[in-house]
Image 1 (cartoon, one colour):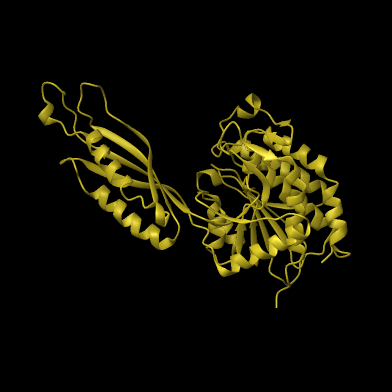
Image 2: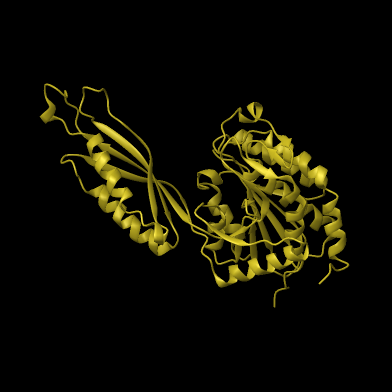
Length: 387
């Protein structure tokens, strides 16, 4: 099938936007936007608002006092349920990283903090929305949602994502395409926890037997938590941060740890969390007390028949444009799980291809920027109208 008279002008326009896309990407990458840096995240949002305004697209904001505002923008209308594009503006990098390591191009790749995860995806969504505004042709209104706290589990944006997703017909989350070129059709869920242990201080030489070691308890709990890992079923637990104690010659009166749990299905989460809570309730070192707190959570992107159908539709559009796009399951978490949990068909990782995210070597494959925008646009244009 060749591009129709409606599709061809849109695809051709996007083909001519390579330089403009890179220019916007440079601006976004060179703006610090750590998840806890609300002014920085909102500054990235300001650049996006400016771009959309220049293309005649209005925005609405859902504001928060602590985290970056959620920005929504819609083009088109009609009786059909809307098509939702998603992306997050925050990164894991600290304030000042953009100045230390600004946007640069080296051969076929672009580098800089958040260049792939996921500022290139934001740029793509902006230009797809601009193309829809300029040429129309979509079977429904197209909405883009730009959030600001995904890297820490979307404590503010989760409710916004769920509100935008309910009633939508499809969701495309523009997280980076995998290094293999794949999009993501399934993701693990994650629970991030902190536990604090209280013991009793005592001199480790003169009064050792009067002490109750919180660090000893932490060691037992760490081993017990790690023993819950079941790699074949996709369940992993990692105690990634520990601290505690007072001085080397004092029995530790306190200790704390932070745990990352990954799982594939909600049932696995429920069963594993019951075991985690039992470990926390047990005192391996008599006299210790433990408090457990969930600090963040991602829902899994569960692979469904509708999600598979959406992927096949997207892959067929990409194939027509000369790109083979495989599907992939990943252990990483993303906002796509929140959208999918509302019942809407969802695929993730449709953004430009990149790799080594969350590291100083993070990169984006420049030559994928326009083709991924075109594939997403064609997939939107060819979605069947509602019955």
